[in-house]
Image (tube, rainbow, N blue to C red; front, side, top):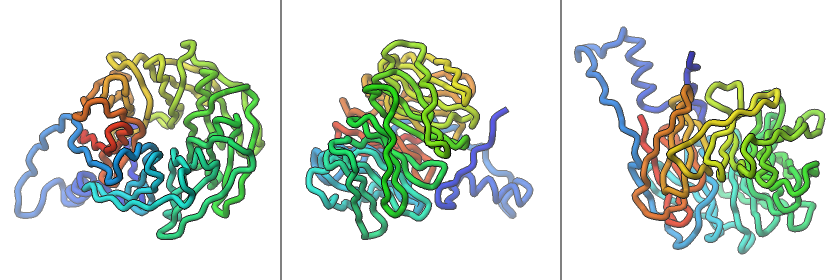
Length: 340
């Protein structure tokens, strides 16, 4: 049975869900209007592409803030960007020049945090206030960042082969990863009190226990050199799903560490990954310039073309309208996939 989708972003409710709630309260009809018409199903498609104001900015990580705005970073443009669903951008320069911002995550206090890969710092923006926190390890190369189950932020130090933690006061702790040259990539906090991390070079998934401060046994992908990249909680809420970029597969791992794989054909790559508001997963197929949909039930795949050729679609996020927004790194755009 499908679990109902619960929209948790800043207390916002998509218009379609609000309409559904209002009609349910009135017995399914609007007073004086007669029966509601049967809605026309939406064929998923890329409905808009918004050009980033700064040329050749290389947009990368993107997230939905708890204030209802979309945020992303420009790696080459060295900016932090606030965006509306209509494509209005507010760009703010990262304090450190050539910082190389890459990953981004929002927090319930409406602050937004991002990794500065080149500057070796973690940056944060809250309203008009910006702060940066240097990492203890030189040239650590912070990349991906996520909110943990303990209320702190956790990030991958890809060069240093360490897992980092930063609290809201800027205190940083680092934990060396047992797997040599693991190539830490995407990570996600889970309700079991763990941080689950994709080890791209090792083609494995590893769990870090937030309470015990220990790493579990890495669980290798079933396909060699699969290069797992992004990881999220699966739509079933009971397992974790991750992209295998080289293998063009979706990996799935249980809390007990049992790994299965699902082919993503006709896709030939799989980079970014996110849960939609419809019990499906969505990913970026950079090799074919498409956004893919994975059924949360059957794991069947559909793909939708991106109008701009060679866009190098990277990361995805839900918007406040529950549509999917994604960065087009080479095209210098943010795209929107409309799917309901």
